[in-house]
Length: 137
Image: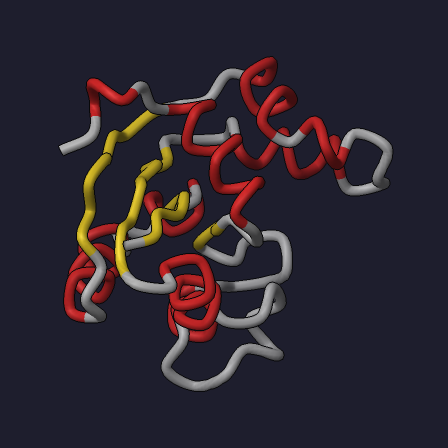
């Protein structure tokens, strides 16, 4: 079994889509082994997205991620990283395939409803940023 990290972002949470997204995650065969609703501070958002600090969108991204509550999760499934990325769809909802989370719940490239780790090392870092092993069931 593989683990990956996922976020239901503030736009999807504010729109009342968290329940539908969680239902879909479970229907797709993911086991949710860690889950919590949080409201990131600016400093926490900057720390989480530090890898993007030199990119022009960094300030807007971190402002957005601390604009409201989000739901952070650890998902488990065979091939979880790829399976979650496939289920999320393209970063820009306009380019996302039908049936993907971002196509259904995303509004724009900035407000695209979900986040997911892109590789094993990224997943390990992101999971450890938000969860201790004691919080996983």
